[in-house]
Image (tube, rainbow, N blue to C red; front, top):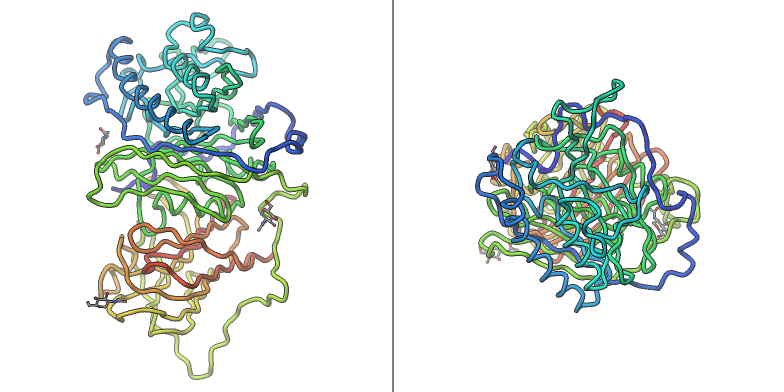
Length: 516
Ligand SMILES: *[C@@H]1O[C@H](CO)[C@@H](O)[C@H](O)[C@H]1NC(C)=O
Ligand SMILES: *[C@@H]1O[C@H](CO)[C@@H](O)[C@H](O)[C@H]1NC(C)=O
Ligand SMILES: *[C@@H]1O[C@H](CO)[C@@H](O)[C@H](O)[C@H]1NC(C)=O
């Protein structure tokens, strides 16, 4: 319940900036491939209901582990065939989708495979299955890519022996265990083209944080370059935002994400990241009622094709397929997120309140464990602001369709989030309160009827602000980024809601203030 994201530990390790190792198939500045890109490509993500090991903490033999893994691999095969029939050129499976969760270091051992570094060695597991022992999973995935003419991206556990000689770090059992994304390409083969070890672990005792932060990308003939990240990584500077700043515009995101409204529902943050970082995101989540995991999709900065199971839906997998335009590196050498965009004739939104006007009283209520300062929306329309210290948010709104039975509040928070991860935030959030009581503001709400037009604005200490608008029953609405200014003002506008508003958020990440 607490966690917003599964798949990541935070023991003070996650945010460390370690040594930078850049792994890339050609230099970062190389945009040469982009000239010949087709105008569109077809991507698929699969939300997988993973067959679980009922006793994940009990060590098993390799053959027992393989029997379990094959249950999930068989589903992957079926979905790869379906995706290929719909023209998909790349298919993404979720984090932990093969082995599941809650292993210990020793109980996961039988599940792990050595995944060689594709920069050091060219290996096609489908053609050459004997080269490395105990690589049945890689063989299966590689043949899947080859059989269906797809790029296949999957997440698995990998192992790397180490000795600890000469003082280099090495766990006492002599092995690194990594939470690993692997990519196999088709081109009639099944070559392993990329390998990424997750940097920001989330309470995963079976896995180690890599000693060296990796930024891993691979190039495709149909869409150019993709960067690889996993789950909790999406909230951090390293490696995610560093890759954006190096010009990576398309991301692949296997995840096992525990939903938490009002700020971090899976599809809500997937879209927010795509819009805020101006990138494409292919996001595949796990489907599990018990773990509150669902929400997968294919996002461009201006479109979203997604799936989010509703309460009571059968617990089953879901394939999302979408046609996208390749996003090419911006011609500019500026980091993408510093490219400021000024609408013609736009003047900064500031509301001057008439004399004698009294601010509605503010109150504190916890939203996802953080003390937000809120003010209630006073009537069917108007303007208001709320500040947490010197960080302020503004709202201008007009109810379009309402019974006036639903209570809404505008909240601001600036500070360090400390539950299930430590990271620094500046957030403006317009939320529907769970009830009439002010202290219900910030609680999880799934249904709403009130539609409103609004402009939401904040002045942030960071240029990394991720906007989202979520309406009743997990419906995404596309936020219009009106304005971002050099001094940190971010404004979104929204009108013509298709359903009642649950929450509209400007989620600012002040990475530079993260604890180390
Ligand atoms: C993993 O363990 C946690 C508690 O430690 C439990 O809440 C959760 O249900 C477990 N998940 C699975 C898939 O067994
Ligand atoms: C987003 O990227 C597109 C090109 O793909 C560019 O034209 C646009 O200006 C960018 N927007 C922002 C806000 O940087
Ligand atoms: C208003 O309330 C009525 C009765 O409770 C309901 O049927 C209707 O859908 C509500 N409309 C809105 C916009 O809230």
